[in-house]
Length: 360
Image 1 (cartoon, helix red, strand yellow):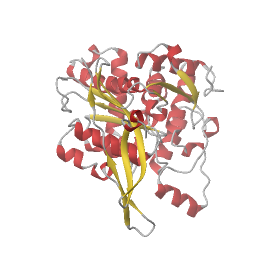
Image 2 (cartoon, helix red, strand yellow):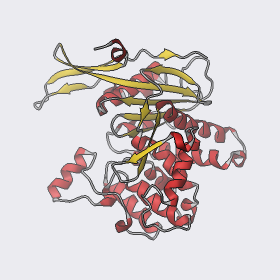
Image 3 (cartoon, helix red, strand yellow):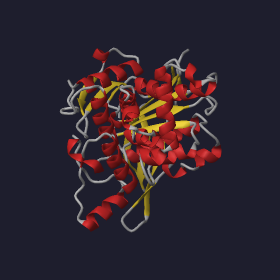
């Protein structure tokens, strides 16, 4: 392996004493101003964050006035940010959101797919159940976007298309959040059939530090009305995700475990193919010289989910996020063992991420 690639190896998987795989990763950690604090690999790697940008898409929905118009509550907002496990509570809430917006499952432009949850998938197989769009892990986001399209006074038809007024609004909102010009963001199509952006990894960290900063700012201000409308909206998204972590992912999932463990001080969201964004409130981390919140973004090159959560958990320890007892609740993700079909431990994942402090 050449020197440049070797410096990006964040994880090594072993089977017995032998190296089976080496996993490259990139990390960016920023403060509330967007200044890069720490890096590993290439913190500016052009990255498809995939579902890690759902909080930004939810902000675009919120700013249309759709939540007030259709009576969506914060649990509904959490589901808009979710990559959920298709548990009964997720599917039923998505159906309730559709009913509140006076639309139907047939209006959704996401497809059904196998459940992320093994337990749910096994139950579906036993029932010979074919998942429909409302079962999609992105059904909350799509339900919210249908409502947003109506709130904007437009047509629901083609709401998922890049040139629909709603998606143009989403693109503007995202660009503002990550401090880029719209022309600096490239767009593809996500697995759920919506536009999905690509931009530098450290900009994902900026998105998440803004969520944490908004939560801090609105708590400091009395009355809360002193917050700007956008700051208040970001704080509302932060609160929805951290108060309802079970809706953002599901039983046994990392996002749910993470936000449950840290008691409202950390917000996190996974994206497909090895992306993760995380925001940490002021006072909940041990980064020297930084009194405010921090934002983290991670990309694992090969998209390995177990490696991704192990890397994120290791970063929680290195940055002293939360208390030791809070971090200990995520130990099962930090150094997962590899077992064979009879349950015998045959391998392990070792994480090595020497963060580099950036010049100030």
